[in-house]
Image (spheres, rainbow, N blue to C red):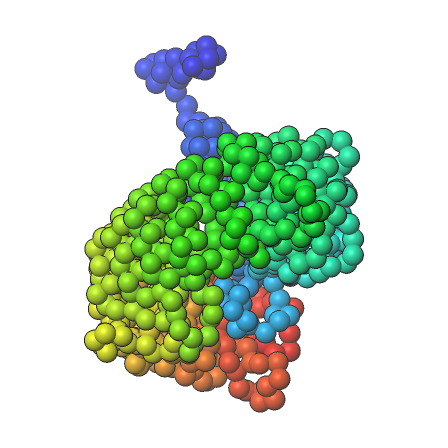
Length: 594
């Protein structure tokens, strides 16, 4: 401890002993809080709890918060957020609910970034990081972002739309300290602007560049020069217009990469007769730091051996764009003993998942996506693959599994073998599918998951389910924060079990289920504690929704009809969320706020 501070403490102790000690002033209390408590808190939940202690802690927490997280852009206004938190350097802002990813929300619903960036431009001159998810972002927004924050370093856009390559050009040219530009599953318009060439000609600070979602060609020569003058680059994910031959050229200029998205894993380059193709195996072998591989679009399996040299060190492998079969997967996965995250298409079949289970003992997260998402398709993975994973990957914490056939026995086995599961999302794509061996509902399988997986916070359920499954969730799912329901349940009692039994529930998504007004009313005690409730194609009436709106004035109740729906009182979707503000003023015509 520095000497002056020791002397101060000694004088305080002496003052107490002689009776001369005086109570510290409020300013001193605030200073002690700032120095001794708040500056050590990084968790936003801890900080939220601290801000509720008293008014002085509330003010102190606001003054020391540098990272601002807003889970719903309509839950609070930019003005209110900025008035409270004045020293923010990092903003996370989320817009549309998750079901928008499945085209269940009409376009042009909202979630505009414009009012936020306009307010931040004059209030947060020291802003360094922005993370947006499911927001509508314009090129003008990106221009303002680039102009307003001279120390701006990180931009991450996930599932966003509204902008194009001209907006990216503004970010690249004006953000001279840019370290991260990650574009993930965005819809980016092709403005025929060469945005890659807009990065500074001198050395850059780039550490991460992700643009695999951009569906237009890029200037490869400019990209090659950019990679060469970015010595700090660690993450690079390319779009499908970059061939494996071009990938080779980038890899030999950036052997320091730790995360690589390969773009198209096929060659668009014409190799002259007699010329030899590049030595792809040597290029991968030279990247000794690679721990994460993705991409593999338009894959030619003959090129797969090129990645063998790095497989032993991989902790993350994403084959979700690679249409490979069982044997092709086996040739790779047998080398991946350290793998912790694995995404794959169901084209690898149950046998491929059995190979994963035999090799990947450290696996923490698995996602199996359908190559054919139609309800009547013949799914190549089933309960056989799920049970193999549960028996071989005992450290699994998160799973997303699309299939057409499942059994209660396989799900029960997973609940017992993988009791550390935090996320369990089982999507049986055909509607109301029972246990395909016994013909029974899938109640007991999902019941076992919530009973045996004590850490479970996220659950997605599907298949033939009765109210009994929901009673299990309400009784045992005490930590469940996010619940997704599709084509499930018997009656209003099912939803009532959940709303009355899951105290931690934050996000509830329901589609095509038989829940009506009585089920909706059963959650009146809990809606203020939730971030949102989404119900589409259920049995709700407008009158029932109006009752909720009258009973809970702090809740925004939106009823959303299809854009072509002529009946003004009819609606397809109910979307409710808590908000500190009046109802939004940017709602389109097909949205009615009750």
